[in-house]
Length: 466
Image 1 (spheres, rainbow, N blue to C red):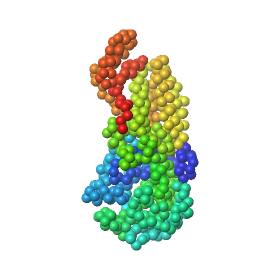
Image 2 (tube, rainbow, N blue to C red):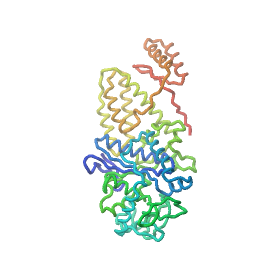
Image 3 (tube, rainbow, N blue to C red):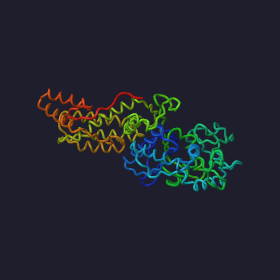
Image 4 (cartoon, rainbow, N blue to C red):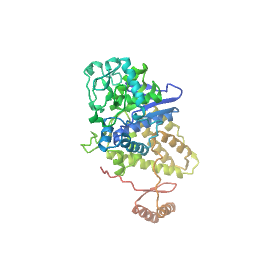
C-alpha cells in the first residue's frame, strides 16, 4: 500500500509496525454543534482509509477523539445554563448518527477529553520538569517551542519564520487565532470566561488546552509511537505540529510514523461560510431530499488530496450514477445463466487503484467500466453472476455505497403491470407492452427492459434544487 506521507511530502510504502495491526488516530469533532460537510468529508476519507487497510488484509485499532472541552463547548454550556456534559451529549449523538448515515464504520474507541484530565495534568507536569513548559502569573502553562528542535517538521515551517520568543497569551482554541509561537497546555481559570467549569491541578484551577488532549488520548490507547495519524489539512498547523512537539518532548520517541491529511471542501467554488449562505450540515442535505449514500459517493468520487468542489449538480450526477448501479445490481440478481465471465482484470485494476494512495477516482472508473462490460455481455447471453456479486461485495467493503440502497416498496399492481409488459414484449404484442409502460410511468415509476424481466423503479428527482 502506497500512501502520501505529509511529513515526508511523498508517497511511501506503508505497513504496520507491530504484528499486522495498524494503530490509527483521527482527530474527531468538537462537539459544540452539528458537523458540517467539510468536517464530514474528512471523516469519510478516514473511513475509506480504514476500510482499505482491512481490504488489504491488515487489522486495525482505530481511535477517534471527541473534543468536549474548549472555548466553544464551555461558552455554549454557560449560555444555556447546563453542565458541559448536558451541552455536548446531544451533539455527540448527532455526530455518531451522521457517521451512521454516511456508512462510516465505528472506530474501536471514541474517547472524550473530560475522561483524561489526570493524564493531561501528569503530562504537563513532566513537560514543566523537563524544561519544555513553563507557568505564567495568570495560571496558564505554555509549551516553549524553542526547546524542541524539530518544531515545524510536519508543516515544513522554519523556526525563523515563527518569531520565537514573542509568545502571545490568547484565550481561543481556534485555528485562525492560535499564535505561531509558544502554545498553551493549560488555561488558568477565569470566572468570567469559564463560569463553574474547571479542574484542580498543581498549576491551579483551570482546564487543558486543545493540543494536549489529543496527545494524551492517542498515546493512552496506541502507545508512545503509533502507525497513522490523520485529519484535515487545517489540522497540520498548529494542532498536529503541537501534538508532535509536546508528545516527543515528553516521551523522547517518535510520536507518529506516518501522517495523512485530506484537502478542503469548497461549496460551489467558494469557501463554506454562513455569511455566504453556503454552509451545510448533513441534516441540511437530508432535508433537501439527498441521502447519506449520495453524499458519501460524492465525497469518494474525488481524491482525498484534492480540493472537492461540492455542488448540487454534482450530487445529482452522483444520483444518476447510483441509479445505474442499482439497476445493474437488480439485473444481475435476476440472471439464471451458466456462462461464467472473467473478472480478474477488473479486480486487479481496482486493487491497484486503492493501493495507490486511495485513488478513488480510478476505482470509480473501474466500477462503472465493469458495469458496462457485464451489461454488454448480458445483452448477448445468459450468464452466471455469482462471481460478479462476490466481487462487488469485496468492493463494497471499500466503497460502502454499492449495496446500501434501501429496498423500495413497489405496489403490487405496478409489479403485475411490469410482468404483463415483459410477457407482451416477449410475444411481440407491442400495443399491450406500450400500454403497460404508460400505466407504470403515470404512477411515478421508470421502466428498464432487460432480457430477464421488466425492471421498475420509483422516479428519481434529477432537477437541481439548491
